[in-house]
Image 1 (tube, rainbow, N blue to C red):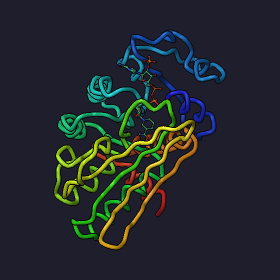
Image 2: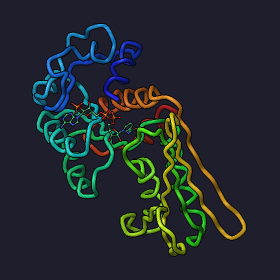
Image 3: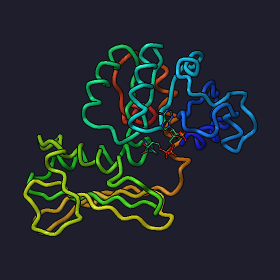
Amino acid sequence: MGREIIQLVPATPKVRVTGAIVSTRSPHIGRDAGEVAGQPPLGVRLTTNLKQALEISDVVIDFSRADATLALLTACREARKPVLIGTTGMSSDFERHFAQAARDIPLLVAPNVTLGATVLMELVRTVARVVPHDFDIEITDTHSRDMQVAPSGTAVTLGRVAAEIRGQNIDEVAVTRDRSGRRKEGAIGFACLRAHDIFSRHDVLFAGEGEQIILGHHSSRPSIFARGALLGACWLARQPAGRYRMWDVYQEGMT
Ligand SMILES: NC(=O)c1ccc[n+]([C@@H]2O[C@H](COP(=O)([O-])OP(=O)(O)OC[C@H]3O[C@@H](n4cnc5c(N)ncnc54)[C@H](OP(=O)(O)O)[C@@H]3O)[C@@H](O)[C@H]2O)c1
């Protein structure tokens, strides 16, 4: 995602890369971030020094790993920098840290930054609110053969959205469809397909007696994620401290 974002920045008005952070394992530390992303040099060296990288930034975008996000969040809070967190896979314990940070800085936690998935989440919220609770919910995520995580962060978020509407805790009702046995009442099922170069696809099935509602979002290229991240970051840089979601960003863009 870092590479995708750097590639899109030249075509994005009023945006410039002022810092770029990598892990201590990175073979690219000290190299120019533009060159590593296959672009002309940016004059920005890849660094592990969070404080230095944040110094002259107006807003920070995080696509890293769950175990790196907390340190970044702390550094952003100390430096009073808005941050968009696109990293997925955080445990529910992170909610406490997010709530604390959002008192001091604008914070946008976005398990999926695309327009389509953001709209899908709102549709799932609406359908979950309207249909009786005996409708079964099954979520399928399809990704390329390289995808390491299952289910995807977006699939889990879709399940969480539906569970919240039903007054359920997703950790208690989530069932992965990798074993046999009768469906449990109130369960939210997750199934994952991994095949060739399919980029990303999420489908949510609400099944009632004699009828089904199927909602889905299919995306075919990583640049739509970079576009969403840059849109969200530019919007976030103008907000006061608080907790935001991509829906806030796109809603404003649509009105
Ligand atoms: N919200 C969304 O719409 C969306 C879209 C795509 C991906 N994601 C999520 O974003 C995350 C990253 O995805 P990706 O596809 O970009 O993965 P990736 O290609 O593996 O890139 C992860 C990057 O994070 C860096 N990193 C890892 N640990 C770090 C640390 N401790 N400090 C600083 N940097 C660190 C890695 O640097 P090194 O190479 O040095 O380790 C690498 O550059 C995943 O959680 C993924 O699920 C979310």
